[in-house]
Length: 425
Length: 135
Image 1: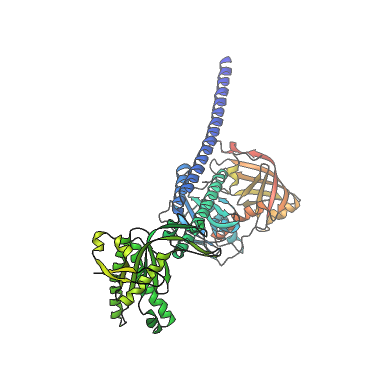
Image 2: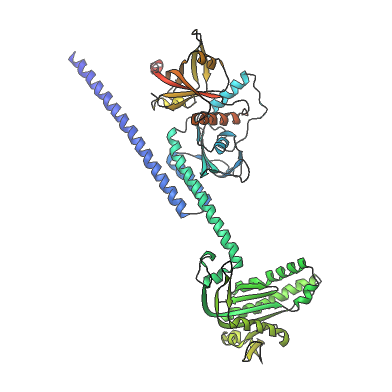
């Protein structure tokens, strides 16, 4: 009697212990879940801070959720501009990436989420579909539309999709799916919503950065980045009127002889085409020798070489070689060859931003600029296509200066003293 | 009260059976695809077609629903009373989204539309786990 009572008591205690253990296990499980969630949020945040590469951020995010929560089939779809569709932009856990596959708004879990801009979690999907099919087949309802093809698992049984929103604007959908019937719980919605917000802000960051880059690139075609570098500016946004710097630069002027005659034989459109073709052929040489084009003046190029004057002179020599190639092409096309003149001078000049507050230009100014232009003008009267000033000649390396010889001492317009010019031997 | 144990039964994995009666207490049993959890003490079912179940509920607001745990197969019997019918709002929209997703996948978007959702107060829950004790 007593023995069985004691036995019962032991059974009771055993049961209590088991129950307590269950409670502890469930609390531990919840704690682990929270820890995992924090870990994921932190990892994704730092990934976003460290990278602007969206593909990388997408892959890393999906990989983390796979590793920690076993969400092993996921995809990120981005809104197609001006259309009610989203398009697969990244995926993980499929035999084929399925990139580019589209989902119309309102179709399937992803389409409905895109349309309503709200999270949707579905489990037991095949059973629900069967229910709909059964109900509709037993009633007189018929539908003309065929079942639709959606990207993702063919035998999907559970799915969660989260809208990626910026303010109220839909930019995409993040979807996780599974072949298991009851793969996602209400608790999964919390972490996926947070991750969805992180992805959305990453997309926003990347696109803002891209726009800025494009703008900077576009500006650099108008204001050379080398000029900004001389002014010690990182971006055109930092420049202002009267920003300036002074230094010893070599200036090169180059233009086409008798361009007026040549252009009279062409239509305006042909003129443009010709000039762009010519400049496209010649201009890259300048960059190759560490110079940059300050401006195009019709058929003329004004270029600055902030470094060594030899760079400018070597560029001048190579530009002449390029011109010979350009001319042989023209001859093949039964067009007249062209002649150019190049004048080079080195001087201390100012580089800076000039203009008015609404219309500015980065350029170099100074007496030396005018002289370089005058020297280029002399190429015609002196009958030599490449002329350099004495100042430049004296700064050349021995090897390069040996290729040049004194040509003449000339009086130029606007200069009291005569200038010595040198030609190639 | 909806417990954590009961939640998996309200995911629409196993269809539920709902029993309603006419005002003369003539019973009718029907299958519903999902009993949605609303809050701790309320559930909802969707009405796509004005079937006998919904006609009965106009006459007698009491209903009994049997749901089943999708993994443990434990049946639960919920004694319910209809408290309101919603045709808009958060609950309606979230039920509508689920229906739309499934209907569009089966090509039935145009016929399967949520008309309204019926919200019930849970009066009591009976646990029928003893019914599968043999297992």
